[in-house]
Image (cartoon, rainbow, N blue to C red):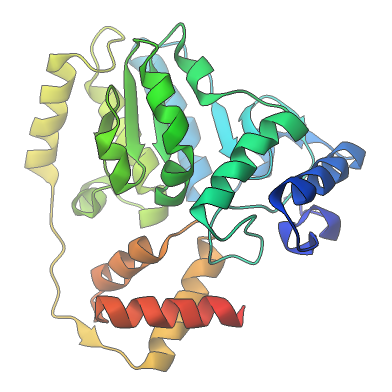
Length: 285
């Protein structure tokens, strides 16, 4: 386990304009000494499942390369070496790099200039692309997803945000909690497990063939298990405690996704009330 130094936590950056914060962040990365492959830095179920996704891609006839979309580093090959760091686009984390979507996108674009890395659209110039993104990261990367699809190769997005449905040329499969029982694991790793299962339906290295899509739809119809509960009401204090614990475990989780997780756990909190309590709780951090 590699823990970031205090200087490589986004929460330690001074307040100010996005560009100024980026310059400071890039300088701290440059002067850091210990560097390890990115795959060794990341923990949690999502990254445990990354190995399963890679193997599923090989089994489906692909020759996969793994890339990381990082709020601290930009788009990087998982083989590259970097220091341990803590940075996220999640508004619920103390290490968030920006609160507003427009500033998150400005930060993401600026990472290429100050830190290096690639554009998303370059991934699809010679091959199909499978993207596994959280809701927050899907929103940040949306401007580049359309450019990726314009390359003419297959683009499959698992997870992402609701807005990603509107991107021409991107086949979007939103996260589906009804598949959790069949796939196992937690909601954190659901997107990666869905991706591995999609790849298991592929034939002869064809990511988005009609037969692959049809096989996926039949699998979903067979195994989807909508989770229904007689939900238990919660006090404000209980909701806030849930939010604090969940954000600590899932720094990239959005408010809407967290509300769905609460409801899926059998507890009840009206949407507007949850939004207000989320804002209050984030403000307490």
